[in-house]
Image 1 (cartoon, rainbow, N blue to C red):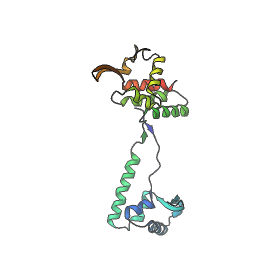
Image 2: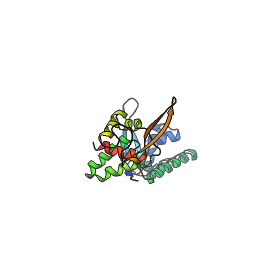
Image 3: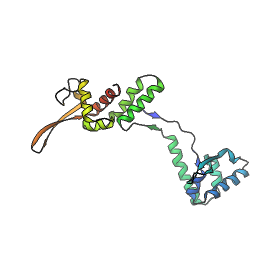
Image 4: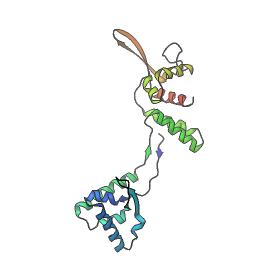
Length: 213
């Protein structure tokens, strides 16, 4: 399975987050940061950033690496230090875990494939992204596939017939496309009918064909 990785910078904890975890006012935390770092002869300004508050005003916060954060909260109560330790474990676990995004729908896969093809200037990634959909379990109706592709079942069926996937006068697969569909029989209001469901392989194949039109 192709994994689209995202790079991450070293984790930091903001003064606002420290305030939330400890129940202290943010201005108290910023004061603690400035006083503690000054005593350690560390320039707090290198960790300063701005953000907009709920009234759209520019405000200052600090984003501390683990060492400086541990230094600041070392004088806090055991309860508060434990909350900070637990939060750092979460941040570090997230940092160590591989980060990747997998398309959840056919349109997302199409967009990601196009982006990768533009970035790498080759066609191979586009095919690889479609293969991500192979893990999709179960058959779905043409209506669902059409919705994912941003069209209607009528237009999608017409497209499949025009491209030789289905017979012109029947909702059945042509030779070579049997693995794309699962034809099932059902009874409704006393009348038997057949329905041509799209298999996971069919979802991949149709999305590729649709994306190339």
